[in-house]
Image (cartoon, rainbow, N blue to C red; front, side, top):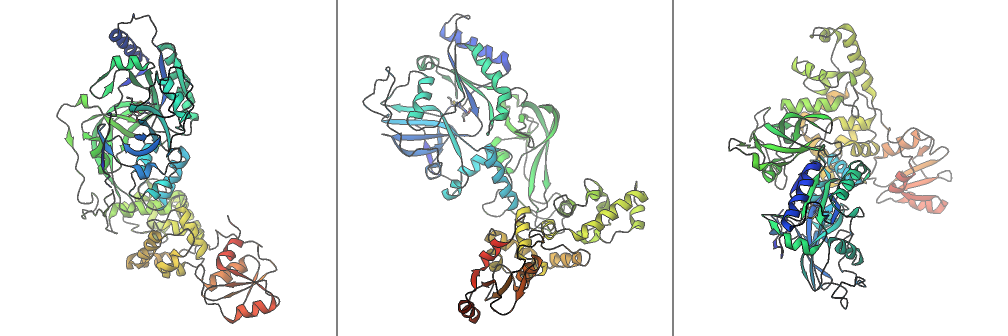
Length: 613
Ligand code: IVH
């Protein structure tokens, strides 16, 4: 996706980092030398949280939002106005403040003639989790951290998509400014909310650098309680006059610094970059790192996500990089330490062919991820089998971890159906496999034969069908054969099933290979239907008549569900009928229902009567 370029009136600077207390104290001393202040005299600082999102610049002219831009390279950003306008915390008009500050020269005017307001767009943890769950469900790549998810959400071609992501924003800086003056950072942070611009509540005017250290110490623990990520503390010289005097070097102001909590981020070396093949064929680059402890955990790998991400961060093999563990997720590379470059580093190029089966990879238009489309790809097969036995799928715990690899490597299983053909003799012939272990495996495989339908559907690893969708499908198709034969229209008519998912399901069952595998499986496995709609007595004493063309359920399924809930299904309407469920083009039975005063409901209403899990 490309956006129009926007030149910032005043460049958006970045911040120098200080790792640890000593570097912060050094910075304080350096400032005093520049300002010719005695080393023991205090400088007043503003301490703020460093929000881990992406910076934006909003231009308000006479209080109206005219333009919103990303930071870009600091000089030129991207025009994301329609997207930014969807963020609830972004006012389209500044509230006219009653200026209280006596130092304010422009009290007659409530807002500046022009202001570039700068701040951070971010995602809360709960939203991040929701979006990732949604993507996982859709078989789309998930985001490594909330910051990437925020960036991805903001940079949508279609702003209505951005609107659904519930982005948030905190404002903390100013670019161009006409017809107004701020005396200090504190003055600005006090004024912004009066204009309706959201600021972070955690801020502290510090009498000197010691006060800043107290703030950083206070937040080292407290940051865990925040509903969003911060990656440090930003320290700013409070007085705007002093800020002016200090100016900036290259791309960073001298008057501000980012204090990074030392334990979370560490440096290490990218020893290699390799790619992984996922069960849907998605190719993910991964960095092999020189092992290092991050927040008490040894880390030797970091996901690099996709090639765009590698290019954006310019990560090369041999680079010294800053890595971090964001929350409890997989570690990621934050940035390359350019100063450590020797010239010996080598750029990584994405393979054009699958590292496992050598098939040429495909990269669908508009997608960031290359895929291996070969259904026989050994690595895909291995991943699919691992998925099949995993807890939320068929839950064959005895085959978890590396054990399934052993069976694959020995040529005993090529697909899921093979699992059900294993015998004690075959298993005990394997290395390090005694009677007992073989017995455990066979028992676990046996027990999986009657897993609920939703687990079975999920276990098939159909693209775009995650756990939740599998559950929805299981509810709609108690008979798996109806799912296999369902058309895109039928599927898409189901609540919560979109066209992409519907097409993906149809495509899956259209493949003769998949069909053969599923049929083969079904000779061994009898998924227990109706797990999403547990057996119960919701319809005890009731009689249902189904009429017309049904879209959500087949008539068999609907009648099956009624019986499962203790009700009766009948073919004709009588005074004993409790409900007539009318599909499209329902005919004479409707008239009969009207005549007898029997309640007529839609298929949707029928579904709503079902108990939910
Ligand atoms: S001030 C010239 N304040 O950190 C000062 N930045 O590493 C410009 N950030 O690009 C930024 N929270 O995206 C400032 N309270 C805060 C911040 C903050 C997060 C981000 C911002 C900036 C980056 C620099």
